[in-house]
Image (tube, rainbow, N blue to C red; front, top):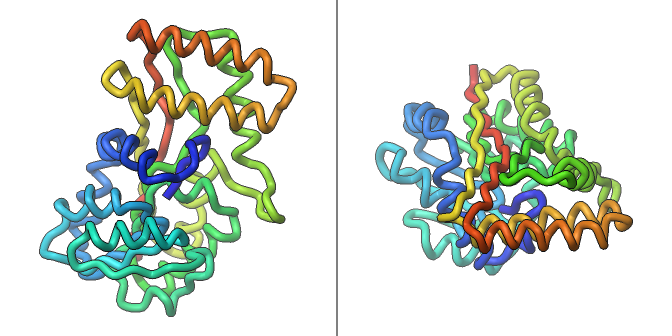
Length: 262
């Protein structure tokens, strides 16, 4: 599990963001997923298991969890912390319908924006072929609001969004296009799709997370546009002054997607 513009996906970062993730995810879509009474849930890009910790109490009974992550250390930690769970290491983009046989619900959090359009289409095809639902939370939308406003906000945001759509090793990442692309892909494969906004709202009570997110957001923008380096440094300093004064407020747009076999 990661998030576009976040620091390196470490246990410390995942722990810092977990409460904000829990508040942001759509309880409505989770309730609709729970109404399906899933017996086997596969969480893709599980990280330390925060999605399972959030969703498991909302599900009826005690479904079996299969946790997927390419980082063996994160996977081991998630399995140890999740009752009735087993781990599956490796590349989740290779999953096909046969791999999902017997699965009731596929979940993921902060994952889709790191995939390509073809990879999302393959995931939709796999879920449709296996007849399982999918609850895919916290895909970035590119909508960012920061208080107090600053003249450089829009410039950094545009550079950041371009960075999230970059091509890496021949893979063009979806970034903020992930939500609409995923919704269209699942619908194209015959599933009923619903989406809901799931923004982070970071105030003074989450100032540490806001600062870490800001640092990652600005660093990604500068990586995309090195000419912003000096100006971005001054911009970050202004933002840290606002954080120290307790007036910094950040809203980071995300979207949740629920796809159910028709």
